[in-house]
Length: 95
Image (cartoon, rainbow, N blue to C red; front, side, top):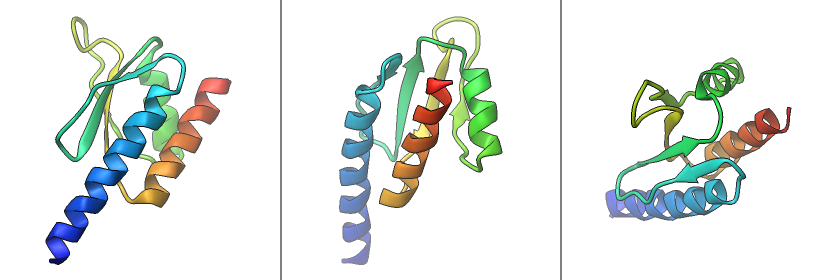
């Protein structure tokens, strides 16, 4: 029961995070059935990754030449973690 509850929480968090990322200009999230969301950006992800890391938020920077250029992956956290990620990401993009 506990495992199923956690699974439902992750799925709900993933859907909320996917919708929120989709509302940010320049961010293009892709639907996921996993515990993470893959997204591409219209800007350099190396800088975003560095600032997120400085703020204590760890994501996977997949930026490399070719189809993964300016792509990242974020693991779905609990509600507070997801909200903090979104808050910091939006702050970075406003600079």
